[in-house]
Image 1 (cartoon, rainbow, N blue to C red):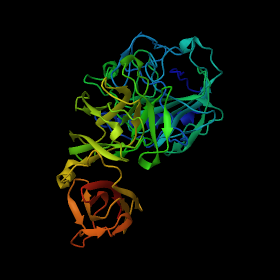
Image 2 (image 1 turned 135 degrees about the vertical axis):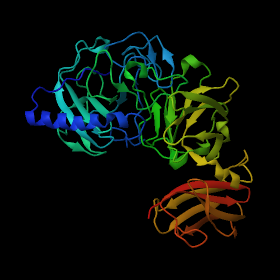
Image 3 (image 1 turned 120 degrees about the vertical axis):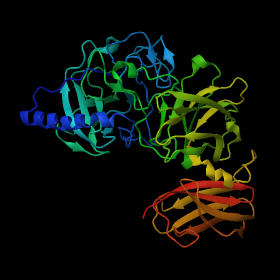
Image 4 (image 1 turned 135 degrees about the horizontal axis):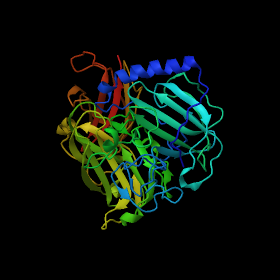
Length: 492
């Protein structure tokens, strides 16, 4: 449950007011330049992570009209899906239709969970003040609401509602990503402990007719973001990510459903699974990955498939490519997850633009012809398809762990990199290093290796003996008909 009405403490000193006005004037002076293009800047989730790395997003932004006290009978999600029934809290369905008018994302978590700054910023509001009257959904307010608002100097403002006393920051404070702002509570228009996290673009103020709220998870449909019709703002993916996104990383988000199951298997030893459904109205679980594309070009999109009994043969991966006008083209790829061999599996090759302009969405919805009962959510990565020209043979479907890279360390590195790998059978092994553009920078001499674990050490130099420059590199290990990739960062 949330509240959009944010009331500022009336007891600011004149000095604080002048400081805020001056700081904001600088922000708005540069606003016309900054707001022309999307730029991911949120470095982490706005809460102290649980052992499984993220809380699910329970209630999301209504792209039709993001203002909580302005329910209009239509809820539009970040993926463009529309709902007109069961869309008002507390009767909305988490993981599906929550909820009409909502301007932010709700993360449910235990009381007093530390709430963190997701990016560097400046505190422009930190107070307890009366909540909305009436509260959405007809509930009674739980005292005064704890509210914090940060300005980030790039035209974006983040809002944190329902905070528990005491607040950890004051107006005028500068904060860095990861600093504790306060603690999760249920103050104001809230029944259960949760964080209402909101992003506003262009202003921190409440406007009843034209709200400033945008969705930090972006907009992924083949039409313009409806939020853009309100005041020209559009929703972009705002979380800093990488070319490889695991199921707990900043470039990943799952959405609340009743049957998520955390597994101690998969990439980095963890993954998620849910029961599969073949009925579209019953879908209650979904997740989104948004890797960062370092340079424009053609990339292989790969998914990690752990070995799991009863994994579905008909998982539907939705690949969304965003155009310059903000609309997206969607391609659906059906993947047999039962072929999982604890390795990456290519599902598509696409031309991608730089930044965070493409996403992969996976739901519990599977094809009618599918067999088995579980959908698996794990890591996704992109690799320049130029690397694919080095591949003489795709991994066969029967691949069962014949080759793996267990670890590369240290990562990042600046002098020597240890590549630990294992092979199932005696094989001729060749190790190559490619840069982020897919250009070969180093190739080792092929060596006969016996089955088991091995270590290869690379000194950060190309075949001419010249040290490579800082950047991301892909380690390619080939053993017989099998090959695997691993990413590492070189820092001078």
